[in-house]
Every structure is written in structure tokens, then in C-alpha cells.
Length: 161
Image 1 (cartoon, rainbow, N blue to C red):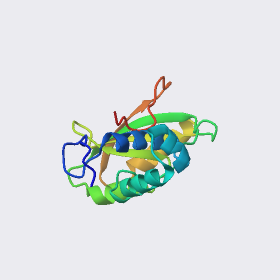
Image 2 (image 1 turned 180 degrees about the vertical axis):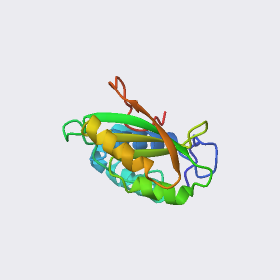
Image 3 (image 1 turned 45 degrees about the vertical axis):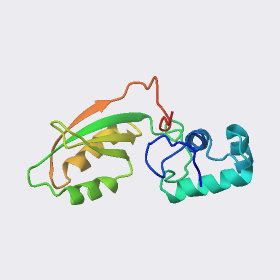
């Protein structure tokens, strides 16, 4: 049984090795168990067991490649605030938004807006077309769009330190 104090302070929480493994995986999910073991000071078999346990407990939701939107022709990034009508059915509203491939993220927020979306489009004309589709979604009262001019910093992942 692992007697190492855990970071969360709860039984079954994460210990320092788990956090270092999560950080290493987040930096390069294609690392071999041997590479990860070298980074955290464990043998590959022990790393394998820990990673599988972290996956089964839901700490690792999946693995994905980080694509370059600009190279793929998605030049424009914007944040769209969605103001919903009082009779909006949130489940149906979110389902309609999720079906739009330009929408990268949907955040339910506090404040005047009900949701804030991160969207990626090819151009301002494409953004205009997306906004027209958004405004036709049942429950949408209005939108407010902020176009991103540049992104001087973007963290890829979650700080686990």
C-alpha cells in the first residue's frame, strides 16, 4: 500500500510521482513508459501501472494531437458571448452548438451571457456565416463577438504543480 503523502490530502489522492507523471504525459503524450520512467525515476513497468491507474481513475481523459489551426486554414479565432432567451432549453441549445464544427469550446459562465464560445473560422466571411447560424439556434437571444488579434501566450494543458 502506498504510504506516500498525497497532494490532495484525501485518501486515494495524487502523490508527487503521480503529478510528475501527469505533467510529463501532458508535455508529450507519445512518450514511452521507459521515457516517462526516466523522467520521474521509476522503472517502465511501475510507470505503466501508475499511468493505467491514473487513466482508470479519470485523471487522464484521453490523448490527442495539438493541431495548428492557421496551417489548416483556420486563420480567425474569436470568442462569442451567447445571451439566451428566458425559455431556452439548455440541453437542446448546447446540442445545437456542439454540432457546429467551428466551435472549439463551450463555457457556461456567470454574468450577462449564459455561454462563451471559442470559435475558429477561415475568414471574417466564414465567421459572419457562423454567427448567422448561431442566431438561428432556438433559445439564442443575441451574441457578442470578440475577434482575437494575436495570442501572445497559450498554455497547452493544466498546471499540476
